[in-house]
Image (tube, rainbow over all chains, first blue to last red; front, side, top):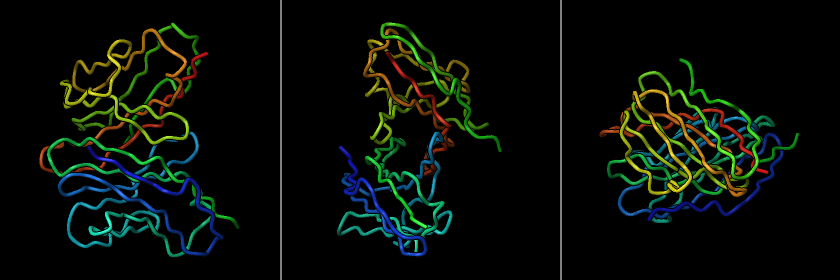
Length: 114
Length: 116
């Protein structure tokens, strides 16, 4: 079975400060990892994914994530947060094997204060 | 490129009534997914279609939920009869054919269901 843990229900940062949203996963075999963002009353928007290769993945809106196999983590980062980054963030994992079943974490609400 | 379309956006029904949700995926996307997102939780996959065939429906409560994708394009998710615990946002997503490529899923805006 595969699972994702997002240990923080909420993260608060001041605008301009670095933002980190934590994610750890459990999956058999090689993981494929994803980050999505959800704004109020809207569906999930894809931010970035790790499939293979460089452990540092760059995505949309200045976000990046670092894959750490030994720590089974895939933390989302942004060097300088914006107020408009305030939203709900979801980490998701799937197995390398065929089939695209994603397992999502419980989500982390990010609040960026002006 | 048009995104994933869903309707209705909101629905309020009483328990034991039936309800249906509609999804139109991105053109050319062979794979379609229905998720249930309960408030405060991440989305949970209910069913996955590849064209008009079911790939995974292991978490679909089949005694009350059904879904179809007859022509391999649009899809309908039905709940009959609804229970209070079915109150959630129902998200539809689509992606290119899975195969050996690892494509992200594109999500629609969702249908917020309230069961009274």
